[in-house]
Length: 462
Image (tube, rainbow, N blue to C red):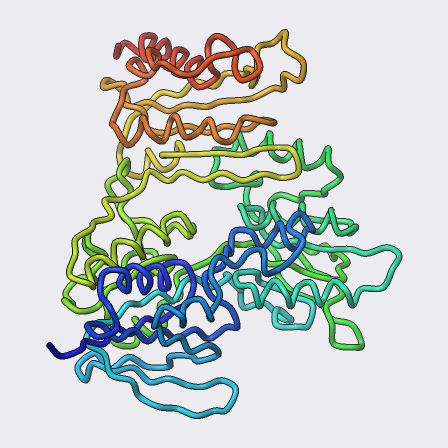
């Protein structure tokens, strides 16, 4: 039997999970695996970078799940600091550029995995490429930011974070822990646009309480530099915000430059489109996974772009199985995400109000305030839960939670309910674990479900 060659573009979660799974199922005599990574690292937790920058994670290497040497020991030909600059679909080959030497060469493939990830949104503003302005997506990015922080002299040190989504609030916390005065410039109505504005307001209030200055309705228009060429301020709404360092927390977008150049199918958010097996639509021997693809939102019935390591690793497992002749599918997501800023926990799953309206769903909402433990038990902290349910059917559409210890992971209850297509009425009967140190008799999620059932009844639909 002739040996096939699998080429993998991208050496992080999706790419190396696919390569590793394929190797488990087929040995080197059956499948030759060549993986290209333009950075210095493989198989690391990009989601952990803010916590490394903030000092919660002591060492960079703590974020690495598997080193290049470990991959190579499993007969995966992993080539670091090598960028793929072109895909020749018809010729079944890729062009590689060795970044250290400038050498270019072609490598043929029988099967191809595209796992090129995402790139930080970098708006085309004057001064945006100045030293001291950082997007944070890779370990190399994180190291560059830490090096930049070390350049800032002792005394009053100021950081400006542009954007107030997950990356923005996490990096704001990291800068605060590093001893910087932090200003967050947010173009939107409230921070955390992944929440409804009423829930985002709770995040804003908490950030203010931590000493983080959040300016809403403030889209950055320019980055100003000093005599040394480094950043010294960000301009937004005609106001100049001094900065020794700037972190871009606007979000990320799929890195699909290579795919776009050869006409591979892209979705409305710019990500690659795949079928349930993660095979690129219309291409039998090309798969894609991770932050460069769009996935089906099981609640909205549309594709969306979600950059999360959980999905990327699952994509890789599915791709690796299929590449090696096995079988796997990735059915879709419900949009679950959690984050924190200091001790405030933030979670959401399913649809926001504007998401539901965008797909033509009518709905009711309910918001409750509760605690994560029995009210009489020491350490009980407040928690706010908001729930959306479909008009008439009562089907759960989404849940958002903002609170202290024990708040964020409660969203998993709602994520399971969404995946199962449960109604809020059915949720009220869920048999959840109870003891005073962990929950009130009625868990906050179930209280929200009960309140939502009442809202449906008032609307005449239940």
